[in-house]
Length: 405
Image 1 (cartoon, rainbow, N blue to C red):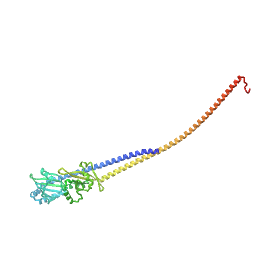
Image 2: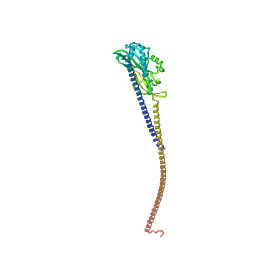
Image 3: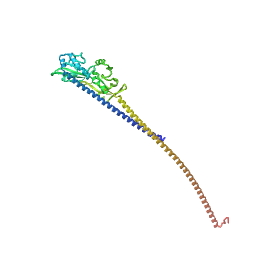
């Protein structure tokens, strides 16, 4: 019983200590791996953002160079001066198709100095309406090229550049070139291994026009999928319930609350940046989704390996201590048995010696008693002899005959 209590007193706190240390180590390893993974993914998503912004600047440069080329084209200038819409469309279509094929340019227009549209290459049969967009108004106001992202009522988000067309210092017309957002981001998923979804706030979109446009595209998105936003472009489908709440929080919290979710057995992590239009309005968000299934799988496998090693080491320590304590316990038990046996033998010897000593004491006491009795008898005999002698002497002195004489 005593040895068992020793084992329990040592093994219980030791087991608690080992489990606590291993748990702390595994937890720390998990946090470290998770932080490293999140940091790596954030860095990659930040790089993706930079690539998208770089593409945006490249598109602006392409648009600027294209407009400058058209302004210097004498044939185009003559066709416009002669108000020959058909000839002008024929001449510009070739160049427009080249830009569309090489740079995904989607819009090309010429507007009269009063703001009336003269020609739309992307909608040749729609002309004559008055242009009142912000980019046009700013170009007309400044007399210089102006560009920016503009959101159409139907949800199209377009990078537009409007440039005044001067000839001999006189305003001839306005040239406008544009590129839809989806063509600005469509190449990113294939090149960088990510997916993008662009959302705009419903407050800036006309529901009827948005739904009409979505009838012409292969999309299962509906107006009510999200509380405050609608999708204007995407390279993957997501379940609205997974990101509805995330879209509604303040932008400053997006990096503090990274969104990681699982869909169709794939794990995604996303980064968000705002869609700012030419009027500097926050009209929506672009979410970049990065498939981190492989990275998370590797992290989990590494964590499982670390956990397994820790458990094996912990069990090894426990077994080692158990065997050591068991061996120590056996040695203590054997030592205790030997001590008990020696104690019993010593006790028996001592008891035997005590019995012998007691016997000797008794014998001495008996002998002493006998000696005392003998001494008493001798003393008594001496006293009687002395008494007899004294009596004899008295008789002699009195001349009393002594018996026997």
